[in-house]
Length: 240
Image (tube, rainbow, N blue to C red; front, side, top):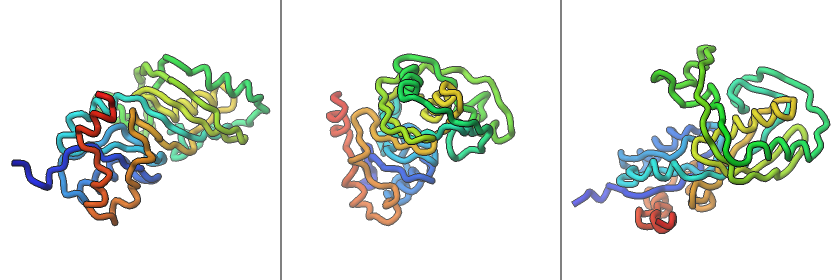
């Protein structure tokens, strides 16, 4: 018989800005009193939104859940490039933002629809010879990276308010939204970096049904587990 403290399933969390994905796992492990817990798809500290925690036997489907498509809403700022491609980095170049017609902006976004190869940023958790790239970046090193084959299923320019652009993107696993913002800025001739990012969906999971990470420390175990999806529920949700 399994212990009553063993929890199996998937817990959708709405991660707050400033937290690492590891922070969320550590808090959940302590509050729920369970050791076997993982997460699907790392979110940078700057980012908020949907982070799926896998618990107990749920960890066995972690790779399956990570492979699913993601939806994000974000904001990029034109005219500034940073070493991390987002607002947590150091500004490396500043350029004037030209008068851009909406058609130019739309063309820059549309260029990346469908399949293409994306070069991962140096500030990332990808490993080179066993060392995470972000650690090498901290040492001022830049190494050769393998471009990744990625796919954009849909995008939407939500609002243009120079020098910022709000957008939505639906993409494949392994896609870097900050690199997307960086590349679009280069295509528009002025550079850009990501200033805000929120993951709204992962596969069939929606952030609207997630438990707020900010409440993890204070909520009771029972209240948190009300949001837990059992493995049969996950299977039905995915249409498996």
